[in-house]
View 1 (cartoon, rainbow, N blue to C red):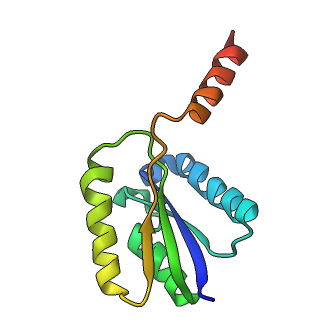
View 2 (cartoon, rainbow, N blue to C red):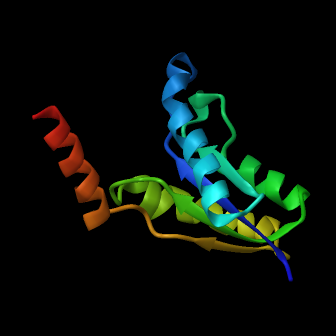
Length: 126
């Protein structure tokens, strides 16, 4: 059985506000625990975040023996990153690692589960 991994891909924030990047790092830890996977990496689209990018996260997983992985974009809306940048980068990575199965998960989108969190936050504020 091949080793499985997950990359949580977020936009990221520049280094000056690095605490904003902690959200994705904490989410990766939560996904790791919830799925029982040892191989979960956060990655960031913003090159000024000074954090690991998608290629670096995939390389880290491949170096640890992962041969099947999912890239899960942590984006609410279907903007240019989701329509153009991320699929193009995933294709480059598939070409660079032909022995690795790389799947791209859907983005968060307008999901009723997100609505529940928004409603909770509004009710807390009221």
